[in-house]
Image 1 (cartoon, rainbow, N blue to C red):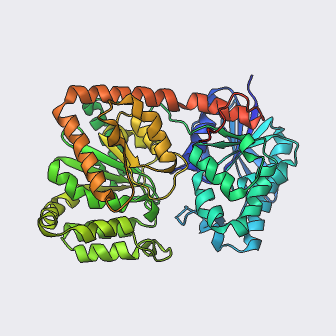
Image 2: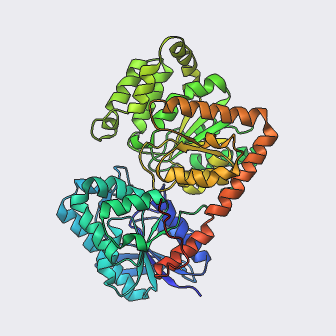
Image 3: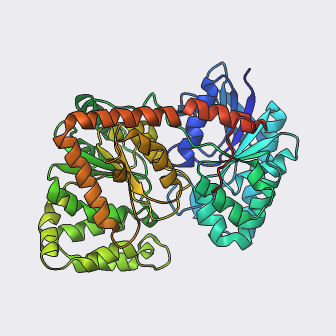
Length: 518
């Protein structure tokens, strides 16, 4: 029997990370027969096929506009003013988006109070059976204050709030986190790494007993292997959609042209999908690309995403393409300063550039101009379209240098049959551990690389080896692709994940796995 579930998200329903998690969660909960009440800030919520009504506050009163019946999901947009607190500096259309640490205490309390009042209005109108708060702050404290023990709620921990906001500012935000956690019936994490980090930061003795392991899900109806011809058609259709309706933010002026450059019937495509911020390690992938092209001249790198470090990455690619290693070294030295953050060297990129000497340097510089011409920045691609790029790729790289709560991109890439290569740490390593048994033992090391001075060379070597395997042993590659996709779809499909979230929101944790402890 379906239940009424209140979800507090507080952000958009497009883009990456928790935005996509909540979009897919709401869609699948509706498919499972539940009634969903989703609080967000998506101004175009009515455009989503699973949203049947939109609630807004006019002159302080909740007004719900129904667009279709039956109403399965209502999206509510609390009136928080123009200021949107975020975890990582970025652009959000229609908002003054600022990281939590940059806000005054008064601004934070106003944000909490406005959302708390909105949740109370929704609860009074629909009487939910259970609720879910997203992020460590401020969703949980908003539900704790609004529900006041009358409705059970669970919390879904995403890595950004934990690692970017609370951990470095625990003296200021730790009390908010603990207040929200104290009343939760359960806490959901995507990885053991996230659980252990959470327990360490907040220091609540009873928290491990309430923590359950439940990864994000993959929509296997979209993310699945496709033959090269079908994948090519998908990319062409995507390019046409982008050209006809370009993104209003986070897009590239020549995005459609960049997407059309990739042809899976001709090229061996490698992709990056995610935020363009320094901590995601995209600089390592760009620096590795001449080494890849030297061994696989028909490879093509597609970089899909948006973020404050985009311009620095373009500068890096331009410097390498022009053979200007000194300019590239300056970019490495300035690091996060180029996205508005504190100065700090990108030490793995710096180590690689400093280690290039003699004949190796000459060979690298000879390959760089052609390599940089085979890198394409597509800008932001909507999540519904990300599968088009992944299904056309032979490998997808997640080179993050910062702890990740979960490797969602890895799971999606594997469902598409693309080799997911990632840094061997945090939640990324745990996803790799799940996926590795799908491959032959000699191929399993291709799934990850170690962060360190040799990271750029290791990325390049593993990509080149995988691309050689796909070209020289096509039958073995097709089998590996199918096996990888089969395992990933079985482990990470959304249907079972949504069932687990619904149970946790009601306070029923018995069927969910506890976090394994070493």
